[in-house]
Image 1: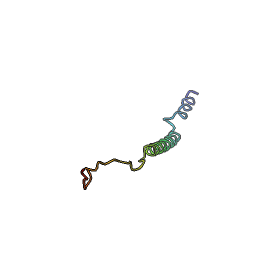
Image 2 (image 1 turned 90 degrees about the vertical axis):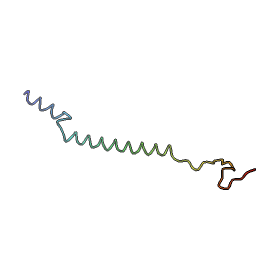
Image 3 (image 1 turned 135 degrees about the vertical axis):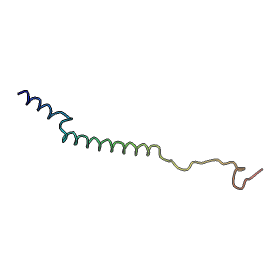
Image 4 (image 1 turned 30 degrees about the vertical axis):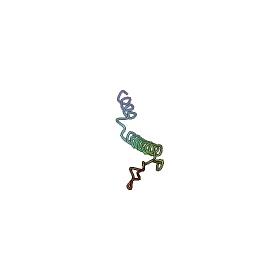
Length: 68
């Protein structure tokens, strides 16, 4: 009777049931990978390059400078 109870607990234990634990770890890895990809893509989208800014360049620093 005691041996059956010990066996019953071992069947439900995460460390002893490698089939269920490996499936769980596989899906956990897939979920975490997808979460990192989506999070990284969103971060890149949020901080994307917004275009060429308008920069005021002084005339005396041009390739052919213009002096007064």
